[in-house]
Length: 164
Ligand code: SF4
Image (cartoon, rainbow, N blue to C red; front, top):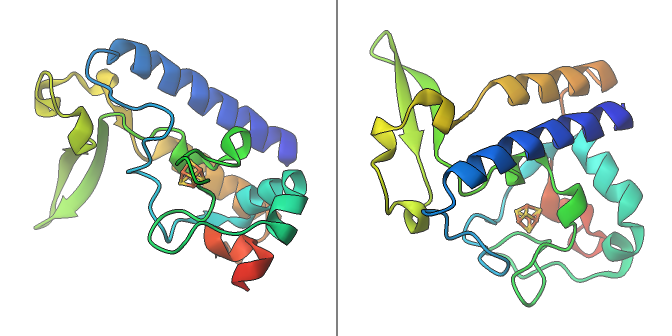
């Protein structure tokens, strides 16, 4: 299970890196910018377990970032579990596209961090120039379902002993 999660994260990183190269001129993302690192992010147990396994002392003894931003941010605004951050954190800043049901119709929606808006309107980008939400989420859900059909989600903040 752990190897399959690592493989999924690697595939996400490769695909995200390719989009980052494509959008290098518009992306303002850099170490210390943490606008996407909001509080209240939840993950499946399969990703929570990886963080617990690899960051025991941080979780047992570390102090979570104050409420209002992700508990894993350090004082400089960097991620303290960067190599093991969950899927949802690996595509931050990219132009996103997804599908939704509205008025009985399936519509495509798009969004991007306001800091990365400068450039061609994201509505005009070809589909393959956007990160499409859905396929990787489905694979992650399958992994979790194999692990535990309860499909439990865990708030990142609750991984810290001091938050419990
Ligand atoms: S886990 Fe790391 S990358 Fe993800 S939201 Fe928290 S600080 Fe940001």
